[in-house]
Image (cartoon, rainbow, N blue to C red; front, side, top):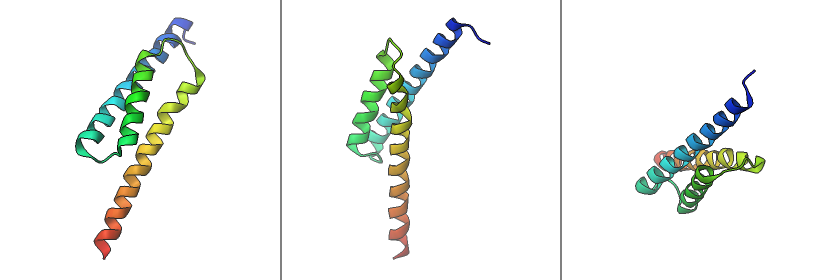
Length: 88
């Protein structure tokens, strides 16, 4: 079983990696235009919160999966619209 210092380090690393992922995908979504602006802003805010979080708050853990789910829904809906437009 890992020690408490290892768990704290792993949690900090996970938050940092999640923040970088959110910031990178939001920037790509903004530059290419495939993400709506509200989702880009939410990604930037979530990424900054993760980057500068000092203490562990359990509700913060829900930000990342919620944002990823929203990105997935946007991508799937855009693909669905593209397919239905190709059939006509």
